[in-house]
Image (cartoon, rainbow, N blue to C red; front, side, top):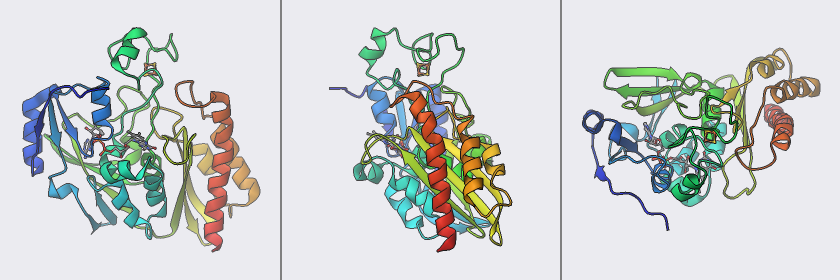
Length: 326
Ligand SMILES: Cc1cc2nc3c(=O)[nH]c(=O)nc-3n(C[C@H](O)[C@H](O)[C@H](O)COP(=O)(O)OP(=O)(O)OC[C@H]3O[C@@H](n4cnc5c(N)ncnc54)[C@H](O)[C@@H]3O)c2cc1C
Ligand code: SF4
């Protein structure tokens, strides 16, 4: 049985108090929301904070409200609660519903999902397993077992909701010691398996600003081994803004193929001016397939996963088209 290491658990009730606790704890302090990612990681000694600061008692991180240009969704709402966004933001609700199991979704939060640690077959293992291979660069070691001559870690962005946020152009409100800032979702993520967020360690994701749903639509499709349970090995988020019946602008974002949700601008460009006809969909799927470079560090054979990029982008765009007609 894997056991949690000993730690001090703090329960602030305001942002100011949480920031103060984090400043006191320094690098040994970590925020936690639902704990469905952090606690398993602590059991495997990926992260070993001695102080864990819960964000669940902070009112400002809960609930949803209409904001200036859309809807502000508190970072501590659970993935189960995200479902209530279905009427206005079906792609966000779908991505949240596709995360793991009902139990995990009742505990796991939106904020935790958007800050999820990157994953790799050589990393998501017990301490003893990792020790037996002399660890790896992401934690305790020096080499990357996926690409031994590489100076960087290629662990995979495995959040289901993050690619949707990037595709629809959501913004994240962060509050830290230095004040508050609004960051476009696309700039919140780094293509680096170790430093995968641009957020400072003290910063708290307070809420997510979803743009008003006027004139655009989005869908999310997920590839995984077991439909009831598994992390994505490929996620496809597609967003299109319409001018009349034509696509005025589009974004296609891939999850599970890089250390960040990867937008493929050429794929979006292939759709502009189209009415999502078959040839435009095929061109976008081909454009998304080319830069999709999954590595051998998660489930399934990697060349098959690459092939599936084309298939899943096509299916996502076909769903987008059928929604336009209904
Ligand atoms: C068996 C299993 C299957 C899973 N399957 C999936 C899956 O299919 N898809 C998927 O996307 N995820 C999956 N997950 C991962 C996880 O359950 C979800 O991503 C969940 O949403 C994480 O949220 P949480 O609140 O539990 O995060 P936590 O564990 O509380 O936090 C995760 C990280 O985010 C940080 N954090 C949390 N909230 C904030 C905040 N507001 N501000 C700043 N930092 C914050 C924490 O410090 C921590 O580093 C799975 C997990 C397990 C154990
Ligand atoms: S990609 Fe390489 S460095 Fe990163 S977790 Fe996997 S083996 Fe370790």
